[in-house]
Image 1 (tube, rainbow, N blue to C red):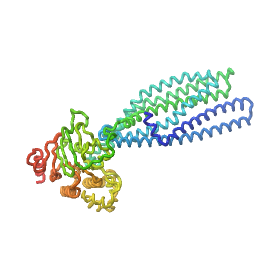
Image 2: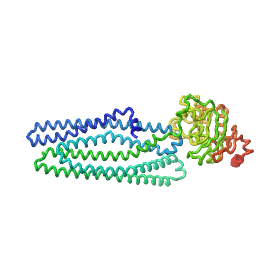
Image 3: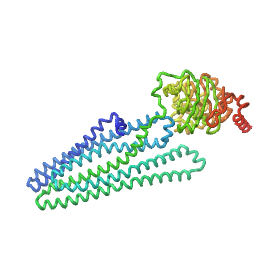
Image 4: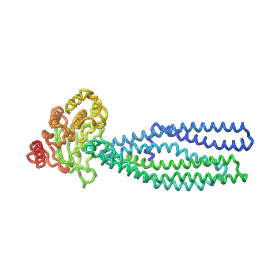
Length: 576
């Protein structure tokens, strides 16, 4: 785990080295202060050293305290720089890793869980880094040095610690072993709550329109209560830590005072030495408490680090390492050769089965089928959003697995069923298709997508700001902007996945007409529920239960295919 995470420090490695060094210097200076205090009592007060000696040693104590404070401040700054740099590097590493994930990888983790890992878990990892760099260095160093000084003052009195330390170690080990799995459960509940929260905020308009506020409140409160109970279950073990440490601390202080006082009465120990020993006792027990707190923090962080490592260890389902970096699709031709596909990667649970299909470059192809017939799944294999389970998909004369993903996907523009726009201006969103697109190219693409008219009607035109998700434009407007964005890619293959469902039939027909006349060299695949959207296609594919039921023109299918004919007649009745 450390080998994977340490490189995330990047340019902040120097601070990660300097921070422990500064901490050790701070500890060394702190340890010297009780020695000077003992001299003041033994020599300055009891030994007749007088006021000059006391003042001299007092100034030395002040100097040591100031230097310790300076090193403490410096170590705090170095620790903050290193830990925040580490979390920034780790967050970037995970984000880049997620960008390489296929749809299957993202489905495995879920969006809510990935968000939690990028936020809550990385914050926990940052706290762990701070703990390791500061407390986990300071506490052992303080324990070792103060123990050595305590033994130097009075070895027999130091036996007190030999009794306390093993007991505390056993208590701490018990807490660590029992608490870790409980924190994993707690983080799982956090994922679940975040999932509810994300779903509710995205669909807030639906919630309000169906007056389901009370239901959503109850669902969220139930999830929040589950998280609360899991957190309480995890932390009720941790609260044992502090009472045990304090009990040991006070017991040791009483024992040292008792036995030390007897030694002074017997003449075997000086008063100043006992005062120093008590100071070292406090520091030893404080270091043990810090070690205990560090372990508690690391136990909490280990659960988060385990979840972070799961993301970093995940092997992307789709790889292009062996692909030809120079290979580009020659045209927009597409061939499915005996293709099968399974989300579960199980031959007994196929979503698509025995798909054989040839699409010529520049053709317009319609795809219709009932819900669950795998229309979207079929087209997602073209830009290799998923990999086939069996057979192969050929684009531009080559198996899609021979292309670098960037080269393949640059040739394919896909307007998904769920249209996504991003915060920013309309122009910024359109330039996702081509960041260097000129104003004329943007306007031409919007005209082809029947979007230029409504964009021009806005007071700021193409500089109109869109809210996250494009919620301040209608569903039909959003669809047309997404089509325009796809057209700006100048793709060889354009896939429209039910992407005109929110526009009226006249606008739908206008878009199809302009696409047919304006982009004749582009292969167009149109998934639609309305037969009117695919009626003019060169060929129409009818899917049923993941299999091709029929392929033909509108007239051929209307004459020979029962499914197509039933759909057509039902829609015509609806129009009538």
